Amino acid sequence: MFSAARTYQPTAPTSVPGWTADFVDNFNGPLNVKTWGRYFGGTPTGTVSSYDATNAAVTLNPTNPTDGIFQLNTHFANGQWSSAGMSSDRGFSAVGGKWVIKAKFDRAYGVGYAFLLYPHGGAWPPEVDFAEGTFGGPSIMATLHYGSAQQNFQIQRWLTKVDMTQWHTYGVIIGANQIDYTIDGRVWGTVQTENTPKVPMWLGVQAGVKDCARSTGECLSSATPTSSNISIDWIAHYKQV
Picture 1: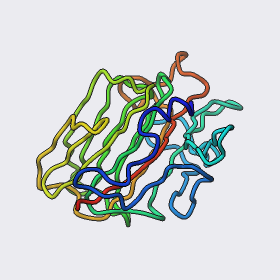
Picture 2 (picture 1 turned 60 degrees about the horizontal axis):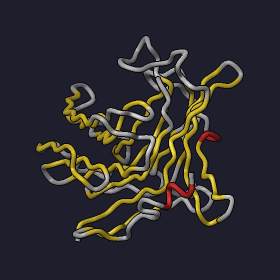
Picture 3 (picture 1 turned 60 degrees about the vertical axis):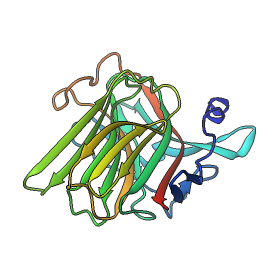
Picture 4 (picture 1 turned 90 degrees about the vertical axis):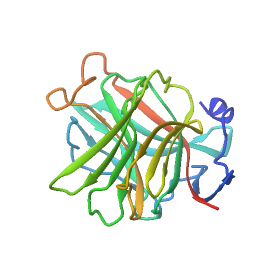
């Protein structure tokens, strides 16, 4: 796990052309709970798994205790499914800019995930789900939510044939009138709209076992493994310079 993570962007760049980092977490020590809040309790809509904060933790390299990977585990135990999620709401949010997550997934039929941006303060929408689907892909959906709580509009983009069991960077760039979705630094989808988020947004990562009665596509079945992980090497936000 750790050797593979080292081979592709082993740490978050502090700057890229036209951008400089104003938030970086390489997860090279215990989880910073001043920034990250782990989800606990409740069964998210469309899932059959409840959040357990102990399923979200940093795993340190056994040969280098200053090298870590954050993992969100979904598993079945004692007759129940549990999953994991966390957000940066308590420690960091930003208006616009570029968010990037370096991650890899176990292939897990029926286990869903989302990398998303949500408004600080909770007045929804807007929301940007910049990578969403099932563990391991191969398809990724991105969705912009805008409008009002009473009338929610959506604009979606799709990327196919991605081997998500390998390390990739998943990102989104929020501009004044445009959203770009990226993978490994390349733009794969663009939305041109005046309805981009104009308020501070925090980042959330979450997983859950999909309920066949309320979900489309892959959902819980005999093919769903009893344990699976999202592994995250780093998360960063950049502002334009």
